[in-house]
Length: 193
Image 1 (cartoon, rainbow, N blue to C red):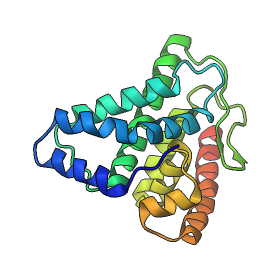
Image 2 (cartoon, rainbow, N blue to C red):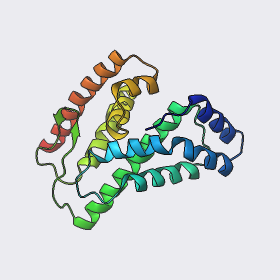
Image 3 (cartoon, rainbow, N blue to C red):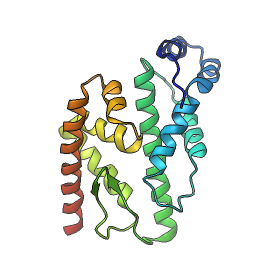
């Protein structure tokens, strides 16, 4: 994965806010494509092995959704990649919902958060249950939910997450550990209902 100077991406994002639209997006894609593909690949490693979305398809779908946004107001590179992670998360959730409709609750999938495994025989709606749990976590602690989103859905390292959120690595490690425990409990509660 090649890393571009943050200033270059931020300048293009400024152009987007300034009304350049499609032309700015066309200049942005080559600069961020490798990183988006890396994030998509990392995220898809957590999915079931027969997942029909490839990293390239996930990147393109996320980028097209971001392009369609009426008011792209990303302040900088970090904000852009956080929005990309959110778009990928939504796509994967929609994909899981579609698959569930087609299969009507077919087999289980494995969902892991670091070294905490969240399977326990939960049916295919794992991803949707995880999304709902993250939404509830967001109501309690927005940054902690953002840590989960960046670590789990975007596949960022502790260091990259700390940079994206402008916090220390120690804070990310602490919030990641607490969030994993909170989500494990939240998903466990769902299983006993």
